[in-house]
Image (cartoon, rainbow, N blue to C red; front, side):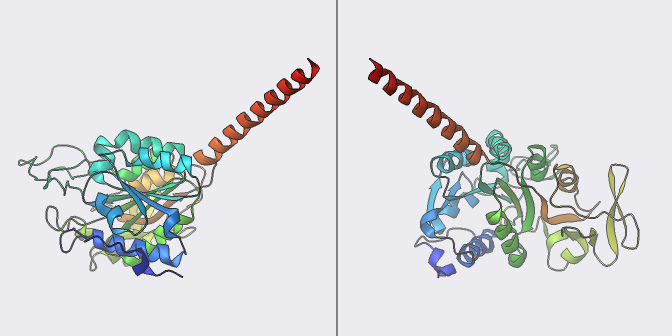
Length: 322
């Protein structure tokens, strides 16, 4: 049996003191050990960014690839060896800016890879420029007067691309994070997990108003399958037409969460909720099972092999006749 220490590499961890990445790394190491995952059967693939140093710190196989292209490399690895557990580690800049196209197509293919998207709403490695998820008005080195862009919400993209597993967790809640990682690891298909992550240097406490230890009870909506969407002391969510509204827990029209659905409409709605107008949902937004890219590829190759064997047999019979 392996333990967390078995997954710790001999590389010095070079993240800033207090960075949220440390918790993600430790949690992942613990989850792999708990699940009995073998080191030689596990691969971490990353692009460019602070989070992309992740493969160096895992004593497994790993690739540190180029900006935004981690899903592409991961797709190739999984196609060649479907038995491997393949994880993609990326950030909000890496995945949603230069890597946006690769991110979308990896999801829609439903290949059996797991995507961890660290979202600190800033470019940390390149010293604090605003990113695709930075809030409107964000003052950064590249937007000294405040960003005028509308921010992307990563999980809305996952829902629009029909992801078969969509989830969100926080770097400061290892227990919840571990549960989400386990669920993703057990899922057969592409899993997208947004991690609310803190950059202590360039965007410190960006998520603190809703996921801080003192704030999360009132402002996070912990999603549970088949359970009403309750949060805070006495608050809940309901639908007014197609619009989510805050209500009291006693309201008979409170929304009930459905994880295993055939479409991602509910997940898309939840992914669009933002503080302070609404609570911030965490947990599994959506999960469904359908054929993966790997399974479809295997079927296609098997058919081609059968055709080839039939042709070869026909040629052999013809040679005997001659």
